[in-house]
Amino acid sequence: MGRLQLLAFVAALGVLASTSAALTKADRLKDGLLANALLSKPDEWIDYLISPFGLVEGLIHSDMNAKNAFALAERAAAHVKQVGRSAKPFKFIPQTVGQLKPGQSLDASGAVGCWKNVTLAYSMSSADAADAGRVEVHLGDKTTLMCGDVVVLATRSRVRVLVLDEFISKKAYKSLGKWVSDAERQDVRMSGFRVFYLQDGVVDSLASLFETLSLFIGPGMASRNAEFISSEMQIPMRKFDRSPTIPPAESVHSGDYLAIARFDGLDPLVMFGTGGSTGHTAAILRVNGTAYVVESTDVDPFGKAYWPPPYGIIITEYNRWMELAQKAQYSVVYLPLNEKRRSMFNEAKAVDWFFGKMKGLPYGYHIFLYSFVDTLKNWPVPVSAELVEIALNAWDRLTHSAEGKVSVYSLIIEGLNKRLGNKAACKTMACIANELVATKASEQPYMSLAELMAQPEQDEWQYPDGYSRMCSAFVMDLLKNAGVFADIDGEINASEHTPKDSYQIQMFDTDSQVPSSCKVCASGTCYCQLFGAYELPLYGVNSIPPYKHMNERCACRFPTYARSPSQC
Image 1 (cartoon, rainbow, N blue to C red):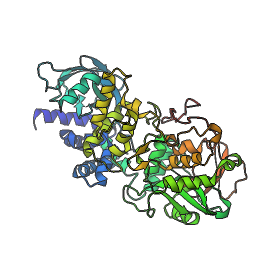
Image 2: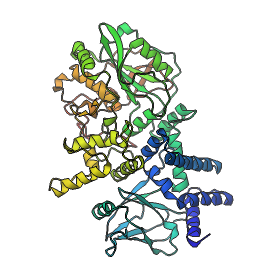
Image 3: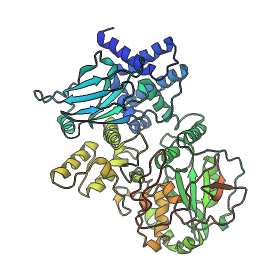
Image 4: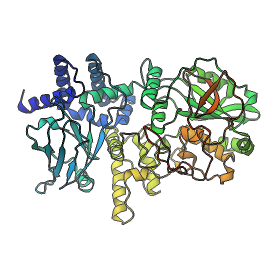
């Protein structure tokens, strides 16, 4: 074993020992050996750790690199369980430390846990344009003897792993090798390295990534998701042990709302991002007197066929939908419109709009993330604007600018093109970065990627496959086009509404008597849950009167999800 390998081994041993003081000597040795193996080839897993969406897309398309990264994460998770630790979902997300710019230093004390004082300084090479320069590391005393830290230095082009335990002295230097391209060099000149900290170490971070993916696949998925929502979001998930209560088809009305959750990883991901208790939304629409359910949905990207085709914006006969929803293990709450809003619902206009403009359009992937990214503070902690920028570029890099429906191009880049103006035709995140630099060069107000993403989605925007409406945006657009928001002149962007946003609008009848067979209450308001494995506590349901440009500028962030300001 060479000197560098020995140092890496010692570093890894410290990194993993910090996660549990109770580990046996043999367990610490296993931790160190596994971490050493991982740190020897960080390019095989670090991009996927930074950008899990890239890993998911790679797994969907059976990409060998993604499969290998997943195997490493599975190996780490097995080891963590073997030594008696537990990895939790989403704990792999790196903590943002700050930006390290040329000629400047970054005080990482307090952000990096193993040393009382940590300062990083960066020097860019002036002699060799291809040389990425070096980092000077100043370390104080350790907080505990057996601990260690891994720091990530990231640009839009690549990420570099910095193991602080490699340094024997408290002042040391680390060469950063060569630039990937001149674009990376310019990125660092303008924005510096974005510095992140793996708060759970290498092995436990990869184990957390595996546990996160296990929310989407494998046996016991529903219970794991319910446990995650209860423990991490502090939303109690109580069993709903009651027989189904389904209103007769002749008693429901156009515009009545269905709040839905399926505990399959996808809906809980929406819940985690928005702070809501549901992840899907549908509505009732009567056509020629017959009750139907209309919605925007899609096939599960992981291949679980729980709903039959067709997909996209579809219409299903009411009783048939209720049968399918129970088979799909949906939890469903029925929220009828109140008398005022029901009287405003123009059924004929809604039917014409649905069949004339919406039916058959694909699910609205283009606006999926934009619906809740209203401000720079909408990302769940510890996700930051800096991490989002790096993660999106890593995703794009991993999937080589693929244009599938679940790709960085479809979910992010096409929407950014809209925000940059109709002339923008970027296919990659690198192109988006160049466009942002161009706006600064032309003396327009400089805009970061996070600021660009926070611009409100506009309902009139059309993408190559037409109007883009995910589930709650579609339901809100139905209500809008039916005249339900005529008292605010229809000035509401449906595309800016998450499932939580939509069920919190004051437009439902929650004053009528709710049958005890289906009664569920949250925030002092009761409603009828039709069926499901778990109760859906709709906090804030029916509480916010509609107003113009509602929910376009709302800060709402984990862990409190406090909505601010009141008229955002």
